[in-house]
Length: 356
Image (tube, rainbow, N blue to C red; front, side, top):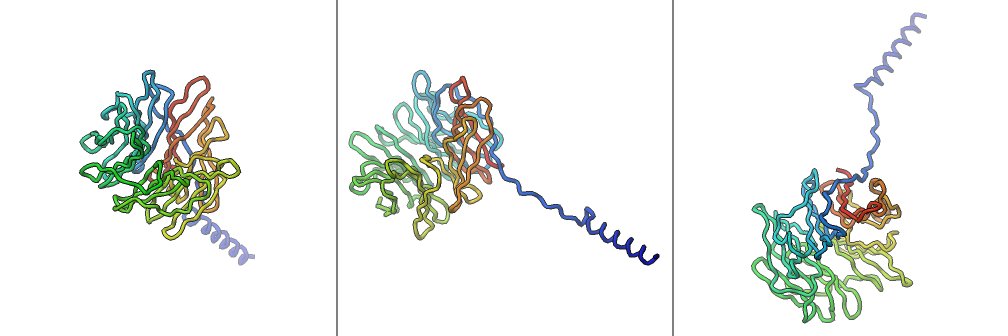
């Protein structure tokens, strides 16, 4: 009996040691990032339009657009410092009629395309403050803008037709495009000798590429009856094209990815989502802002390979339309910027963050 008691005591001591806090391992449940609301100071006038959002990292992002004031459009610029959004009114032309569009990071500087009382220029912010790089001529339409170290492009039209204006770091020149191109819709660039544009031609949509010498047809196998909304140039040679394909008279979103060797086309369940606001997240997936089926919440799509999942932003009391207009990766998180309309008021600015 004494031996049995000794055996039981030893077993109890052994079990206690095995489950002691020092040796026990408590499994931790994986935390799924969620969208949270970020306060944005209200715009001075409404309605308003959000144009672009770009982030250098978790502590710097810029959002552009314009307000519809009583006397016309007014430029709108907001800065994220990692903690809060604030309005910037210190740039040339801030108090004049006009608008702001695409934001680009060029080295340590921020470059923003501006229409200032009808004339185009490029705002540049360095450590010493803002200045403006004027265009060599005024265009009827300013369609898009791209900038990288050593080069910048502005595409649009004047009374003679299509214009592709190129800045090489010292001055401006006009570039020609292949025959048959009627209108350049947008442009993006990875380096001074690697730029991509999407255009309308006599035979439909096409993609052009600048190789440092000339603009040429990139021979991208776009789907039939398709247009292009944007081209996302990514590291290691990956390229993602987003657009709409018309099938049986209705638009359907498609995505094309180039892995450095071949193009792959997919049609995720995104309806007719406009893909201009897509961004590649830190998780490697492609994220897009969508028109939400819930009036009081924003909606986002995550596309990873053949799988598409959806998430919603925080619920907003009395909201009747929550509409993110632009997305950007900010370090390990995602930022969105757009508008929210609360019942009984006009749309104002909103921002949301995933993770961070």
